[in-house]
Length: 277
Image (cartoon, rainbow, N blue to C red):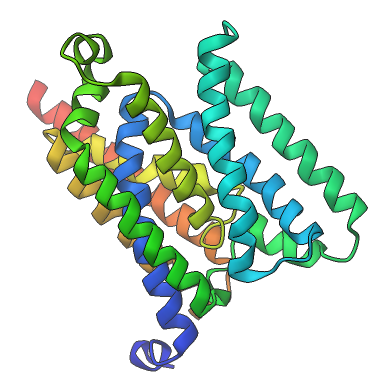
C-alpha cells in the first residue's frame, strides 16, 4: 500500500485532521505550562478524564455524546485544583494529586460496577485515533477554534504572566482570571486528546514538543512555532507509522515525540560544547 492509497481512506483523513487540531493545541498550551512549571496539571486532568470517561460509559453514552459528561467534569476539576491550591493552604502539586486521585478512584469504581465496557474504556486509556467519528471531529474542530481564539485574545497577558506573575499583577493583569483560563483551556485540550493518545499519555503530548522546542529555540515566539512543528511531526508521523506497522497510535505518537526531544537535547549539548571551544 502506498502513502497516497492510505490517505484515501476516510478514517485516516479524519484521524489526521483531528490529530493536527489536537497537536497544535497541545503544542501551544504546552509552552505556557512547561515555562510556568505547571506540566503536572495535564497529568492530573488526564486522571480526571479517566474518571469522566468511566462515568459516561456507565451512563451508556458513546462517541461524541461522552463529551457531554467529560467536558463539564474536567472543567470543574481544573477550577477545583485552583481553588484547593489557593484556599486550602496547599501547593499546586498537592491539589493536583488530591483531585487526580479522586478521578482515578471514581474510574476504577465505575469500571468494576459497570462490567462489560472494559474494551471501550481501554481504547480511551491508550488512544484510538483511527476510530474517531465524524461527530467527534466536528466537536474537536469547534473546540479548537474556541481555544485558539481565547489564546489569541489573551496572548500578551498570558506571556506576561508566564515570565513574571508578580509583575503582571502589579501591571493590572487579572492574574486569577488568567490562571483559571489557562486551566480551563488545558482541560478542554485534555478531553480532546483522549481519543488521540489516550488519557494515560496526554500529559506527554503537552510536555514533550514544548520541551523539545525549548532545547533549540531562541525567543518565546520561535519556541511556540517549533513546538507546533514538533507536535505535528509526532502526531502525523505517529498516525502513519501506527497504521503501516499495526502499532498503537497513542504510544507511537508519544515515542516519536520523545525521539524528537532527544534530538533537540543532543543538539543543545553539541551547541554548548561548540560555544565553549
